[in-house]
Length: 264
Image 1 (cartoon, helix red, strand yellow):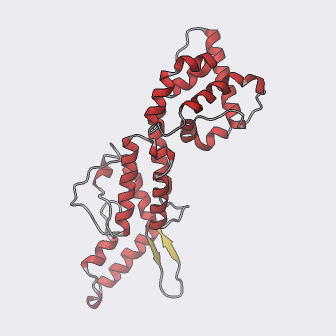
Image 2 (tube, rainbow, N blue to C red):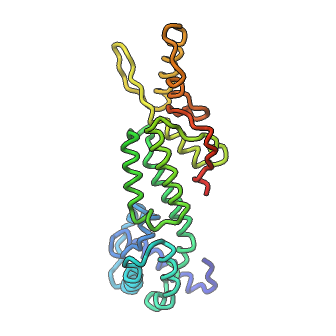
Image 3 (spheres, helix red, strand yellow):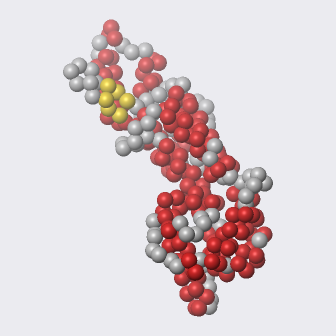
């Protein structure tokens, strides 16, 4: 935000610092979209700010809180409209509220990124072990949250795509790997899906492996069996562990022609 008056610029910077500290202390009410966007980082700075400096800040934020309560708020776009429509009243209560108004310009994009991070965080990783059913449950929980209910169509589309991918994997159907070449986010999703694969070794050591190690074990086991003509696996069994490009341990679905809804 460009400010031509040096005094006004100094005052706004000071106000931004005090608000950040006060939010960290819990002395200042966080706006709902701030909680969604910043999460735990909102409370990372906890320097002491005297209450007398927070009166105007609190008044403006309480006004916003009262304005956006109720069933008439169906989306974040409604929140944006209400704040902009009441900009004069909010600035009268707190002249530095122009900082929050400027943040609103970036909020829609920031909220989309928040949804992407939340969805990617549901999937398994090297340090997170989660089953397909558990992942599907977490997706449904996120779907019912205020964040998703008030998100834009793009974010809802991303969640729907996640929901479909995990539900299909439970049925033995893998996602189409094609869009990964043009969508880096979708590529990250496909890489994470490998960690759903599990394999338990045979013999004395029945070590449970996950991810790429499990896939390597399954491929090796399959290769050994194919050398024995009496134990050649069927096509269905081969499809279970062969996933082009991504090595997804589920049946292939490359003929649907689905477009990548993570790029919408």
